[in-house]
Structures are given as C-alpha cells and as structure tokens.
Image (tube, rainbow, N blue to C red; front, side, top):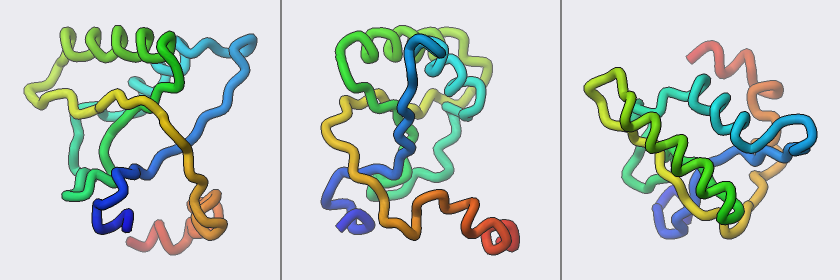
Length: 112
C-alpha cells in the first residue's frame, strides 16, 4: 500500500532528543546542513521518499517554518527548496529488517 501511494506515508527517521542537551532549533539547523533541501531526486510518484520535516507540535512548527523561510530567502541555487513541513500524526516503525539498515547491509548498499 505504501509503494502504491495510497497511505500518504513517507520513509522517515524518528529523532528522540533531550532538549537539555540540544534544542529543537539546533536540530533543525543541523538538518539543513546535512540535507540538500533543493534536491528532489529521490521523489517518486507516491511521495514515499519526499523531503520533509515532521513536526510534533505548534512550537516545533513555528521553529521549522521560520527556518525553512530563511532557507528559501537565502537560497544559493536556482533550484527551489523541495523540503515540506508536515504535522506528525503517527510514526510507524519500519519492519525489523529495515531497522539499522545500513549497518546490516553496508556491503550490499556499497556495491550499487
């Protein structure tokens, strides 16, 4: 159903964090540094691989939206920003064989 595009699901990483150790603002800024927010190469017809930040509450949405607006304003590329902000409704953990996937399948992934 996910591959067919009928669920609206996206493959995502859930990040649990301790705000005494790192703020949500800092997490969002780190996300932008390690993520090409203009690259849409993994986008498919189902949206399963869309670029997205899933926010859990109004405060996270405010922070993420302000940060996204900043990226749009200072864009250094002719490509548009393709990262979406979406409200997290429910997180579905992947099947066990997808957990820690690259650790389990590094050799296979590197041959491609």
